[in-house]
Structures are given as C-alpha cells and as structure tokens.
Length: 355
Image (cartoon, rainbow, N blue to C red; front, top):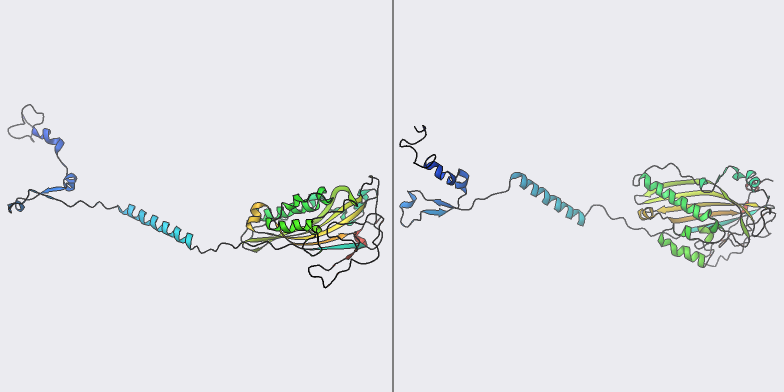
C-alpha cells in the first residue's frame, strides 16, 4: 500500500519514490528563480502576436551591505584627513637655530705676595679652601632632574651629562692640561662651532672669540706640569628650558691644580693654581640626539698669573716662591677694532694656602 502522500495509482514502477525522486535534483528554490536572467511571460502576455515566450530580466543590483559601506566611508575620510594634515598641518616645523659664536673672557688673577709652596701636596690642599673639594669628575655632580613642559627627564639628563663630559674633557684631562690634544673636548661641540674652535688654535687672538683658554684649561708645558693628577673640583650645574626646542645648562665650577716646575723631581715645591669657569651651554634636539653642545659663554678667572703675561693661548702660572712682576697688563689700543680690553684682577690672599 502506498503512503498517504502517494498518487492513487501509486508510484512509477522500477523507480524508488516515483517520478518525484527523478526530478528532485533539478528542483529550483525561490532564490534561484528570482536570480534567473530569463523570465517566462504569462499566458495573458503571450496572447499578443509574435510575442516571445520569455523576456530578459534586468540584472539584480547587489549593493554593499550597510557595514561595508560605513567601513569604506571611514577609510576614505581617514585617508583624506591624512593627506590634508600632511600638506597643511597646524604645527610649524621648528626653524633650525644656528649656533652663536662663543663669547669668552679670560681674567688673570695676580697674587698680592709670594706664591706659597710645599713639597707635600696634601698639606697644600689641607690648608686651602679646596680642602673639602671632591676629586676629579666626582666634583662635577648632576642635580636632580625634572621634566619641563617640552623636554623629558631623560633629555634633561642628557644635556647635563653632555655639559659634565665637556667640563671633564676640557679641564681634567692631563693631555689637554699640558697643552697636548684637544680632540676629546672638540668632538663634544656642535659641528657648526668647529670652525671657530679650530681657528682659535690656529691663530689665537685676544678678541673675545678666539682664545684657546676660553675653550679649555691648558698650561704652558715648558713652564709647569701637574704635581698631582687628583684635581680638586667643586661647583654646580643647572638646566632650564628657554623655549619649546631649546635647553640651556649653566656650569659654575672651581678647579684647583697642584703644579710644579716642568722637569723637576717629586721633592720640588708645588703650588696651587685656581681656575674659576662659568660656562653656558645650549642644546637643541639635534644636539641632544648627537650628545653635543653649543658653548655660548665662557667666563674664566685664573691665578696666580702675572697680568703682563698673555693668557690667550696658554696659562703661564706663577709657581711656588714667585711673585707678580710690577706693572699692569699689556697695553690695549682703544682704536683697534676687534680686540678686547685687557682685564686683570687681584688674587685674594684667602684663596691661597696659609702655610
């Protein structure tokens, strides 16, 4: 007996499930029918003469989904904004500042009496204001650093460290102090100041721009040598932001050297020589990245020196037992342009060891 869904006469013989099973693979669902490119006319439409049995349907418009459309719009807006900001960004590129020439002043300090000396270097230091100073680079201490409006803590530390490195290389390196190599200090300067630096050593001039002793500390090697490489140092470093692209560091340090005559034995009397250096550095972002500095101002007081001695190229210290010769500094011609007025000070007795 057939199932209730079978036709009254039953299914076709020899075919399981009858004819329905035979055509099941070619039965089209509703979506397939809607997507067909050809559509059969109705009987009413085919009444007209020469009317074809089918007509071609217009292709279906498969539009983008709402989410895809929104994504395309967002990408287009972002791309357009990026192009606009690249062409007309609201922030102006910082204008590069050319380093200013270093302005320097070197003032000799003449002793008021005989320069005290001793074969015991430690005794010299112990009886002088440098008794409590630290030794070498330990005397150049970095202050606590705090970020500014436009510079991070690490950038402040970089500026202070670079300034300290310059102080060490220009005032504590024995090779530099004895009139030898200057490269260790030179490589820490902004490249645009190197011409002025090199000219200062090629043609030293007392014009406030080209004195080697304004760049670094060095003694006449034919006259004096270090009696002790443990140089005493004390001073301060401070950093401040001057604008959104510039940091300035001020250094104010006193260096005290033990010197004796060149070629003398260790038993020869030594004396103390004091150098007060006030240096002002400037750093832009390129300087910070390259670990270099622009040296703007160098103000140096050094003694005991004779006022009549030229301290432009090298320092000619008065050693133990010597006194300053009578007479002031070398004459200055006020009509000669480009030359600085010679200055000389008096070295206070309290600045010398009391032996």
